[in-house]
Image (cartoon, rainbow, N blue to C red):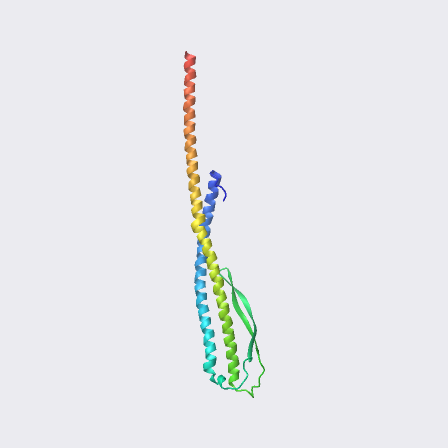
Length: 208
């Protein structure tokens, strides 16, 4: 850490820094509060997405109980081949957002298979997409929580270190400069008194 210079220039620098810190702090604190709110919303959305995925999985069993009885090979009926994730800028934080999910449906004869297989295909797609949404919602929570931690550290740095240190430095410099100024005044007065005494002594010698 650089040694504090006890000078008028240093005092001016410290005052400018303190002014800058005080100007930046409110915007940092606002961003921290906004990110905290968004992180809370993201946790609620993640919880809802998990519940929706579980509900869709359960719905397949309750809506299509015939799955347990039919002698049909349905294990590879619907396959998710990939999904595309976009990006959302939220309070300066880049968050993932689901753009598109791709599926491949195994070929089957609509005449030779029961009509409910069409419903099953859609339900399987919905359930798979819901699981992806839940996973991305969890990633959004992780990113936002990390952003909240970082901005909180910055706010704490300003509130607990930078601003108090600048104020303390300003006080130290002012005390030092005040002491130096008083010492200079005393020294000047002593020099003047000494000079007057010396002048008086010369005058007495000349008179003698």
